[in-house]
Length: 478
Image 1: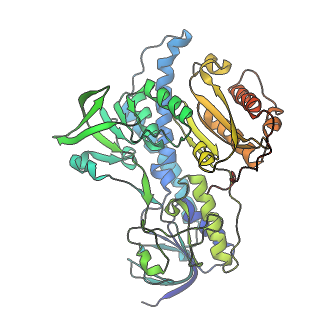
Image 2 (image 1 turned 90 degrees about the horizontal axis):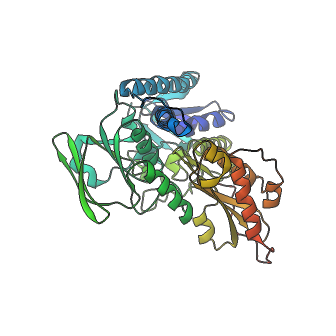
Image 3 (image 1 turned 30 degrees about the horizontal axis):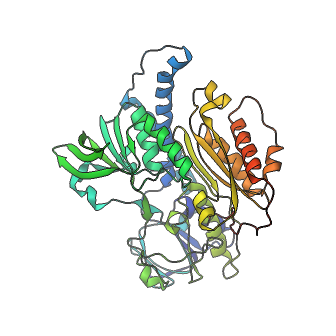
């Protein structure tokens, strides 16, 4: 079979790969998009969208339970697990359908099905038999779930988040391992849908938080809803028949519980298996990863770009889309690659309360020895939060002491997804605290809590010091 020569080869047709294709297509018509698995992004199939559908059902059930707190009495919700999962599947397939339509719109001559591996810096071999010589290559193969060896004992009772959305009904009991975003979202949603859930964290982490005060508030809020230990002491995980047995210590006493499934939500890693990156000529670190410039998405090889989750940068859809756009544009215009500005980092967990981080984190500012001040609001007594009986959580905002410039925020707050966007826009606009306080705030709204935090921050800034500006960039998501 003759070797096909192309200007750009893109490996992976997920969010980053599709973005890279669109951007590269503006520069050349001699390109290919290679996909080894089913078409449809991780977000649409097993990520953002089906998880939010499950969470929406859980919120509906919780609203019925909480109605009595307003003096509105209704029977306890009757949750039909089969109906819940049927709607999740139906709507998920609808979202996937939109992606498939976009794929079908791509010139068939540009679409290759097969798993690709490097046979040289410019040579790709597909398992379908084709060989490609690509002047430039974009690797956008995504990520895969991490499966710790400690879970091997449970065999086929081990599942990952992808498997949840294949259920035709809800189980009775699930042990969820992982205090990250995936673990928190799925554990709380399943719990509110009547599944007996216990959430086992490790190392004290709660989602993407690094601010100790916010982390403590988030752990308390989640822990008030379902059994959650951010730093669980698990002694043993075993399998007995069709049950998973977890032995752990709680309040100094050894306990044992039985579950139908063990859900591993312990993180994801770049999908590198089978790529044979060693043949690409790129220098790889101990993880088998190259160094990637976030402003160009280039590796040291220059003509090879990484985009999306496989770049091991920020595993979020909007970041993957931006990665793909940058990588595809530079692959298309190579060797005249240009640097691209990055948006202010923004990450949201759709728990109740929402957990969100914006701009520079508490950990980043501390590690960079920045001179920064903090303003906060506790939502326990915030007006609108009490009106809607969602009065729990903490928001903390950070600003550079010498200039008052907003740097970032961390929060576990009611309707925090909206607060996070406001703050992300303010940080990206390099707004200072006084300018933010001059913006309009309606009454009574959740956003008034943000104004309280900004007022607190303004007081804590005090007299502006003569220290050097904080040497950290809150814009690019590096």
